[in-house]
Every structure is written in C-alpha cells, then in structure tokens.
Length: 76
Image 1 (tube, one colour):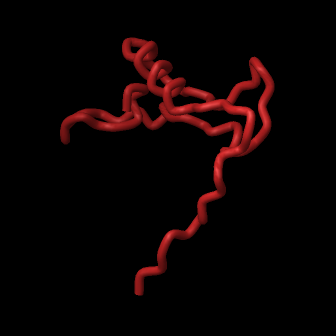
Image 2 (cartoon, rainbow, N blue to C red; image 1 turned 90 degrees about the vertical axis):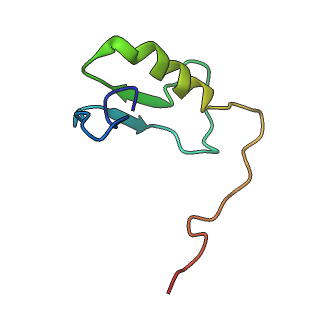
C-alpha cells in the first residue's frame, strides 16, 4: 500500500505499476547483499516507509524456517 498498490480509502487511486516481487522463497540460502525483494513504485513520497516495512518483514538466520503447508484446509 505504501508503494501505491493499495487503498487506504475507497476513493484512493491504485497504481497498477506499484508492487513487490519476491526474489527469494523462505528457506532459500542468501549471502550478504543478495536482493530478496524488489520494490516497484512511481511515487517516492512513502518509499522510505515502504522500505522500512519490507526490511522488517525479512528475517535472515543460520537455519531455515520450519516448512508450512501450501494448502491449510479444503473448504467444500
């Protein structure tokens, strides 16, 4: 949303060119300096906040995270 890809209010315009591309899946080995996310934006007014949020969403550790199932439940 900070990049312009979402709405805070119903009338807000959505920037269809804004968003995040995930370059590394959870558990993938990374080295220092490897890109993990790619942020796309056309308006940099909230870019610093978007970068801060993106960085806080990533945790790098020495062991891979536990595996989670892709499908949690089937609804019929």
